[in-house]
Length: 593
Image 1 (spheres, helix red, strand yellow):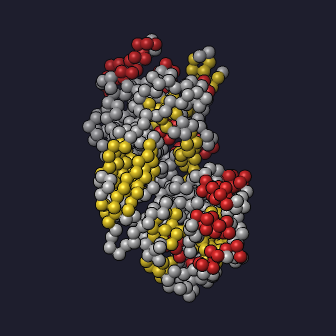
Image 2 (image 1 turned 120 degrees about the horizontal axis):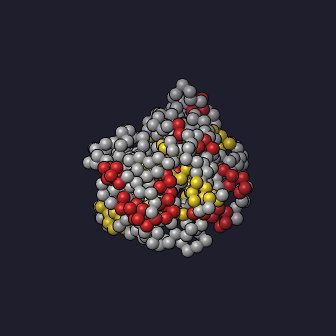
Image 3 (image 1 turned 180 degrees about the horizontal axis):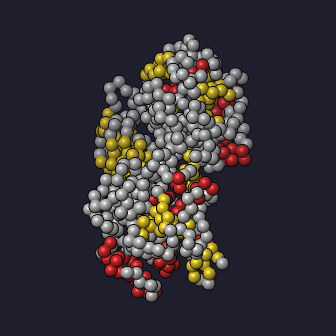
């Protein structure tokens, strides 16, 4: 017997087969869910890598399935029953069994998606969202769910609702979609990290065989679902038997990529327009709506926040603090630059726009903690004024640090150990000492933050006396990378994998502890300077004589290895300046000139 997946993966996509399909890029994502809405079969949230593949933009239609029956002589379904729920050739086929779906896929030169492929595609490039369009509750405009609120009693013609970020329609609702996998409630507890599939599927003498007593996975929900669970990207269900179809079950197909053969490139998506148009003056809190001629897929911007991405439109919101704003947008098949003059609010400082940094405005904040559980070193809470400064949006990455070593000849790290905990160029560098961090910062024209700067930036501008970056609610696997692998990461996560704070800074809680300039003194808050405090030597002395420093330095923010207390904004930790830990990294700041 030969594994179905290994046979079908060897089939190279042809251009005619790929018509109507979208390319899903290879990569890692967090599969599953956590929280009150998550069922046990969706947990734990875990990290999965999936190879690149193509997937149908639409569910297989009645018309397409009729062609399959006509060409192959496959057993015809009960067309009268189907017509009640899917009355036209443009509606999705329903009442198909898992075997029917597999047979169609083989005839079409494709296969069914694995459950991991299906969820990666359904997420549309969005990270940590409940639905394929974001976090807003379904209301009848996003998908065919929950009865007739959307205007359809049963199924809707495919493509009647907006596409997700990959250009896929009806990944929520309409009909439940068959996946290759066997349905196993506890599969996520020991799921493989690369291209997982649950259960066995075999080809014998060219004929597919599988145990019909084993449940098969169904994803996406249907028109009949009366709760929000099934419309969520992580919602799972299983049919009792693979040989049973209902008026709720349909499917779409995928086509893997054989990297040994010529790759068929995705259709080029082009920038169309932006509102407000480039070249004008905008307010610092402007909302930019960008339109493409097709779904752009995963998109990045060097300024602002991407707050929504659906169909052909992406929304980027401020605050923008660069008087002369240069906004660079990158997507799967292109890049575009927008320019604006930003009207800076009176009294604010215009940003000079250092690359990938955020301006933290000058001002006073309450530093430390007054909680009963606070350590003595975090008390008393006291007012501190800090001048304006810039701070890196992300922790310094492996890729950035490797460039530093190449260009300077600085002492290399123990890369075998580093890559165990931070395996790619997009992960934070770990195993760096305070001396290493100081050398990198000097090379890049920046410096390490003072402890006061670090805490002011972490509080996000609007969280006064709060425990955490996001408020007072306890941390969980959706908020930051801490306390084990419940968040999908056994060790460090790629920078930016978790939501930003109010200033647009990522990973100020968890992932890796971050070095600060200051000497660690447990009683530093007992009589601190009111303005721009730094404990120990002056900033100028530290920058000029960093290699001579021997006293313990401050570490902040907690790490992937930390407890919930460690990721509080006021928590203080310490380390020898020569310490290189697998959970220690840094980010830089730059003075406003």
